[in-house]
Length: 542
Ligand code: NAD
Image (tube, rainbow, N blue to C red; front, side, top):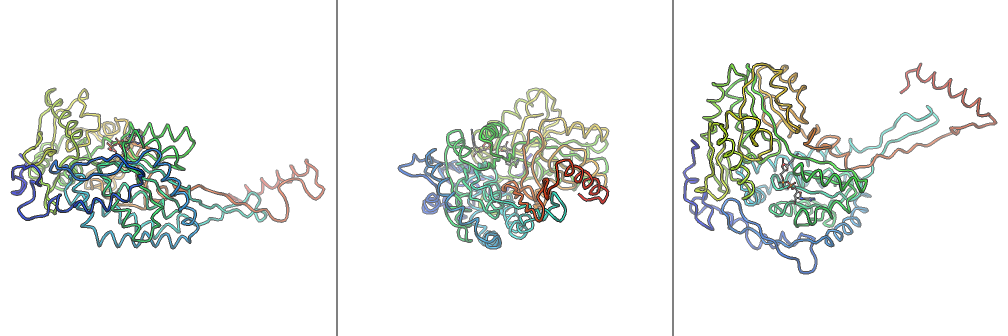
């Protein structure tokens, strides 16, 4: 049974954060009308925009009224961004990088402001909101420091040694169209935009309306750090209405969201022959091998499955445990899960917050109820908790899940994990690889070398050995993204910044042309080059 904090047990009252003890900050006191109005002024929307309202998931009360952009506003956003991009790209790279490093410091200094906003917009626990600050700061520092290394001109072997001087250069794409979801609104708006900016691009960003305040706040802070304001345009509106307009004018598309929408975005980008990176859904697996440290594995599994109430693309929804340790592991995992403190105060302390929307609650409830009706057993949790707030759902462990159940292969995107037992490593690897997704996985063993060997056999873009997801995600110098239906392209590392650039090869020829010259006929030219090619291979020239 889920153990609840004293404050989380207070009965829900309309218009009041039920998890906030008397006198504590509430959503309403943290996200004031003046703050909303200030941030809303950052939306690119002309004329008399049709307003849209958002609701605070923790309490169900109205959170913000924001102007909506039209497709014409999106076009104007691109014009403004395009104009600003030229001057920005002309600056020395170190000046652009300095903006990221200043942003890093400001973000750490002012984190409480954005932690409030993230909690108010998503309903997640403060600790999970902090993961976003961490992710964005890591990206800012990494690309602020390493962009020079990624983007510098590189000498390459020329067509003819000595005579051809060849350089590979990187040019900004221009204006990046960025579409982001609601679940990690800081990390997936500014975190992904930072490498685009430092590479000399502008960005037109469409965050999810529900979490637009967080993106608008990040924009304000980046402008304070020195980014020209016009360089980052934010448009707001219904995905199917303005999303296509964002793709229509982009020089490159950076999309994060569901696999279904990702396919649509990919088709539109392909029709225009512009590139796209697609960070999509997952049905991630965690493997507990027979020699795992069961306490550490149980603690890691809790983080893997229930961080941000499971509304995390890299969170775990399938847990495979070796039969010899299954009973012992599951007892520990269920006990830890049952002891999680659910709560929604704007302060640290709760282990899990609420879901974000009615739609999320509906899917989670449906997946659990359908599985239970078809014979699955609930080892922990299993029900909604309207007494805590309108969208709370207990962290839930299901046993006895079979292939016909939606929860088995479809992404739930909530605090629900199914457990399966295995006898051999081969069986575990095959089962983990049996979905069309391939985003993240986690392997627990006392033998790190064995863990890495199993990792190499898993078809996922990131694998964490003895950690849930943060080790790989936080390794921002190394790529992160999905295989199969989990996406195309990568964020982080070299790929995370080079995707926002075009490669340009500049080759200068000296002394002799690459063709018959100095009275040489075609046959002699061909013979000379044939000898030259053989010599180059013999001298091991690349
Ligand atoms: P979604 O696909 O419904 O929406 C994502 C964004 O796309 C939103 O801004 C939405 O308004 C916009 N959109 C909707 N229809 C569109 C259209 N026709 N054209 C262009 N844009 C459109 O996804 P969601 O429910 O907001 O997010 C949850 C999903 O995102 C989950 O599947 C999750 O796994 C995935 N996700 C993946 C990663 C990753 O890095 N791989 C990270 C976070 C979330």
